[in-house]
Image (tube, rainbow, N blue to C red; front, side, top):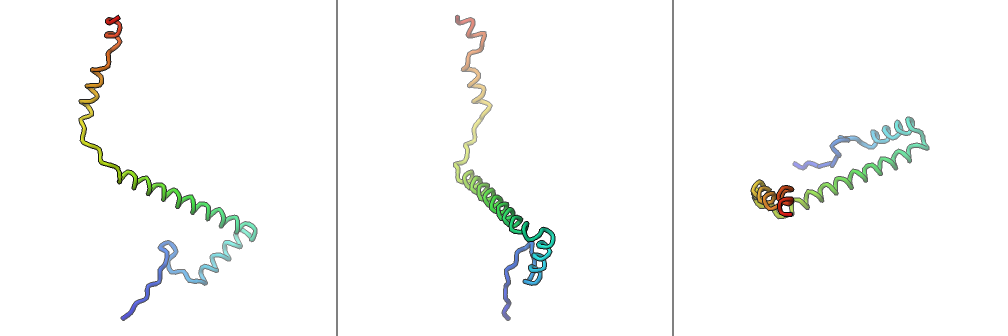
Amino acid sequence: MTTSFTPALAFIGNFGGGEIILIFLIVLLLFGAKKVPELFRSLGKGVNEFRKAKNDWEQDIQDVMSQEPLEDHDFKEKTKQASESVPTEEEKQSAS
């Protein structure tokens, strides 16, 4: 038993050539012959911008995932030590 797999885009479903031609004709009637190239050009630019943003986002995730993990630090202790080492205004005035 052999089965053939026909790849189809999930959001399009199983459209054939006739359905695509019908959709194109409806778009042509709605927008007119002069506006259709403009429409598809802007659609193509939008798809390219989306792909670029997706690739940038994926690259950012890969960069973060490839970084060394942060060590477990006690930030409260470091903040306390830093504030103790910085002289206050009163200590500055009494020293002068």
